[in-house]
Length: 305
Image 1 (tube, rainbow, N blue to C red):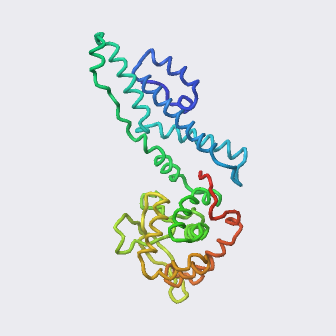
Image 2 (tube, one colour):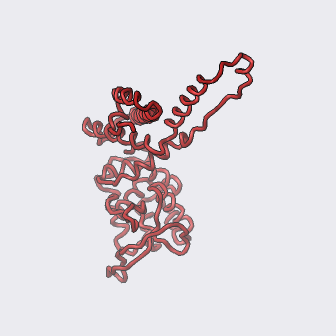
Image 3 (cartoon, rainbow, N blue to C red):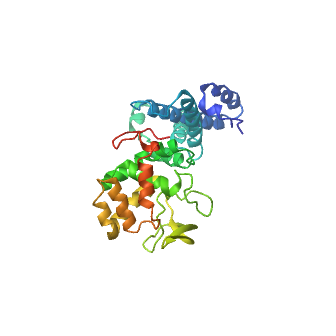
């Protein structure tokens, strides 16, 4: 068994020296490890190119944040090159193994070589690399206001475009509902529900759900109740369901007619019964007009972490 469990083997070309030593003991295992190492380095280079391609530095970027981002990208590359990986390592192993088998066969004349069918190996999951990266990044807990905004901004923009409201309005509402992402409802197994807008699992909801204690206001008095909430696979799915939830409920029709005016929109949500808190719209607008979102504009493009 190859002794190549350290991360530097997969993120540094110098790690090949370790593999060369082990290859003398088990060449097939060494081939697999080299393939995984190459896959990891390729993914790390891809991530670096993606980050370098942004038009300008973000307002929160610094040499220290860049250093930690590079460390994060290396760990992400190692994670993605594990089992099952993105398919590149398997392709390399199959290709090189095929070459070895071909070399051991009897020599062929030119006509036999021409008549031999071309073998095109199947690349599993290679076209899903971006989805894997996005899903993996969303598994990381949100720990700051800056991370909340930068990670969710692309999803907020997409959802906002569908209903004609500013992205900051949706981020402000999600920030109020989840404490800037730090208090997203968990499932029974402790994993995140990704429910940014605390949409309940009513009779129309056919997906997974989780039950938690929540505060409801009845005639101005807060009351603790047990309620079921929707569970999603990602934050993006939460934004998508938020839009669908509003569009499919006629009671939010008036609010959706006022999306050009952020204050009128959130007041419309409150009047339609989106939340029982009598100061719900006021709290959203306080966040919307606050310092945390003051630097962001509707058409702005952010590099999410």
